[in-house]
Image 1: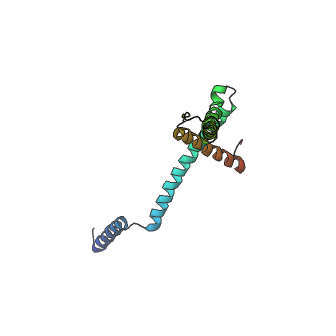
Image 2: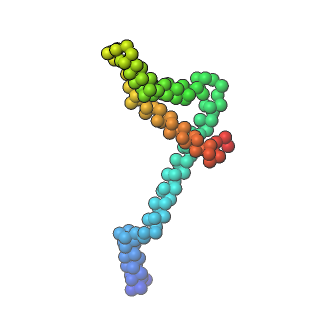
Image 3: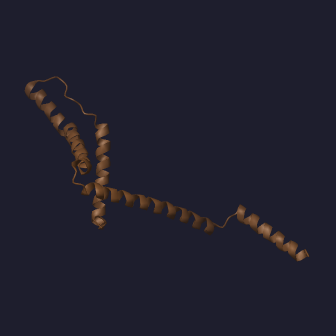
Length: 138
């Protein structure tokens, strides 16, 4: 029936189970972590590919309302940056020196425009790296 050998085997199995739960194998933990990272990277990769497909459809559109919003935002932000960094300081200097104008010039809040512009430039850099890597248009 239930002999001494069975009791020892059951006890050994119980001790083995407790030890594995308290002190898990490092290689098994590493495998689990790698699998979780792999799944997360796969999900991110899938999302990025979906976004690339949306970008392709938007860029191929003949409607200015669909394909023209990024260039429009880029030009607006670029113009705001040019005004804040070049035009306004030079115009203020010329007005003060040549015409003794003591008044203020309009100030553009560059906090928002620079955030948008840097975001666009970041996306532009990613697009350039895609082109360099040969991913674009495939």
